[in-house]
Image (tube, rainbow, N blue to C red; front, top):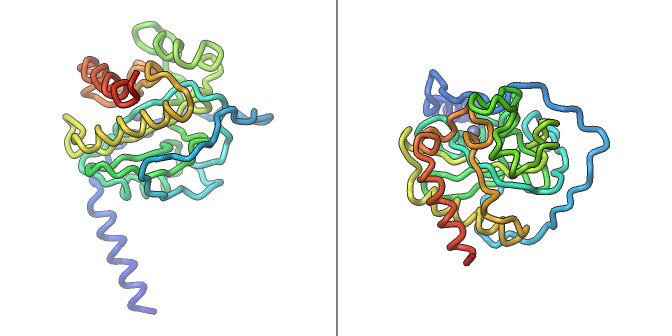
Length: 237
Ligand SMILES: [Zn+2]
């Protein structure tokens, strides 16, 4: 018994000590979540995912996997996790233990491993906002509104219509090529299965205009355009 407790304690120490003390992870969503009675049935078809994916689902009914049904899929939103050199498992456990909102459907590790935290037909809290875009003064940018529509933007229910992918990063400057390649494959796979056009792939910064996530794509949008071109190539469109 003592041995088990000791091992648990050591694992806890090891797990925690790898996370920066001053956690730079800024919560993705701060506002109150809209009430979701009369949730619409998802119209997205559930088809077999052909990629190799590690299942490490959050507990259904927990804060960050409330179990809300996804509505019609309008886009994919990419993120960095906002903490350097953190593995998917560490990010997953951070999300599982947090008491505020912030989660993704998928996480991608530095070595390219794809981990599923929330099934695609359930909502993740990754792109909620009540803060206006400083340029357009709108809640959700004009670009976001092209993707999710004005109605969804005004109702602030973008999370109910977009799959969120969080990418871990070793530095503040870039994703590893393995992470990017897996993200390209995952986005291509989602587009193929759901019929979503790659032009509907976006990133957090592009969607809300005030959160520089990922910072290097906010600074250099051409890098993100290149990413989307790679997805198009992968799909063959
Ligand atoms: Zn983000």
